[in-house]
Image (spheres, rainbow, N blue to C red):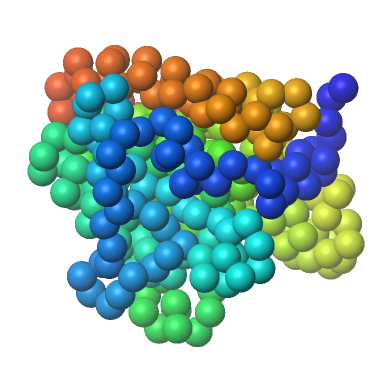
Length: 261
């Protein structure tokens, strides 16, 4: 049965869906988490480190949600602070230095918009990531695994290949926020979800993403291993292809991809 956009929004937000760490555990070997941005502190809303993918050293970065209220508070409900994005960029620059491909898992309702985040330069941190990722001399693959919200998602989404899971969503802001602004009524979020064209199917049709990764019947939460294997297949195909490109060609293709969008 075909799901409506609003049904996909609710499915993407399900606490039982696999998180970034679930994919890291199933796809990579020997993951070592690295902490801190070397400017301010650690942000647990973003997990990052080094690992092996089919014996290839890679850098993995994931926005991380919790399973329950306690975990979500610790992870700030997967809404990164500036230090989270600066940590991600630090790890990306390290990956570039050592020639490691970068794999990003996007799963956030958006960047945190609290006073402290603004004081520490949230907008600047996101903008710097966008600019720096565009010019990195190493392959980047990003996968929207559940919810990709606004610049908070795009800050690790400037990649050579961008994919979405079948029931994931990717949008400029939440349907509730969209409805509040355009319709002056947050209760019209279901209508907003339809108008926003935020599903994987919509975004693939518009050429904004490179492909849709299938989920098991009922959603990714019903079979973690199935969807992890599908993600792994996509990563393997792209790493093999992207690593044959020169740095100049890779950067030029990435730049044209986003200019076309």
